[in-house]
Length: 134
Image (tube, rainbow, N blue to C red; front, top):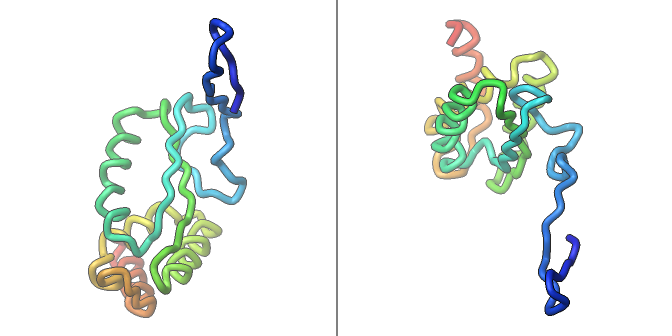
């Protein structure tokens, strides 16, 4: 944060961005590195609001093409969500992050009823999706 004064009176705060101040090397990224706009979303895979918001973010990404990238930052606030994060990270290491994220969100009502995740149900649903190609 820098401070400047236009006329010598009370200084005003001026925000300064270093570009990637909210992006961490370990954060999952969707979209082009060269995109001029970056959306940083803090999310919990067990959160109903995060699940409801994801299709909107996905639509924004689709409509803007290479102009926007999405950086996801884990915020596992619900009990047991850290296990869902581990699932996503395992998927990311296998280059399957986005399909697994979408499967978790699509079936969230089955495995994360009101923020109380049942990770066994999540794994079962992901196995079913992998077997059927969903």
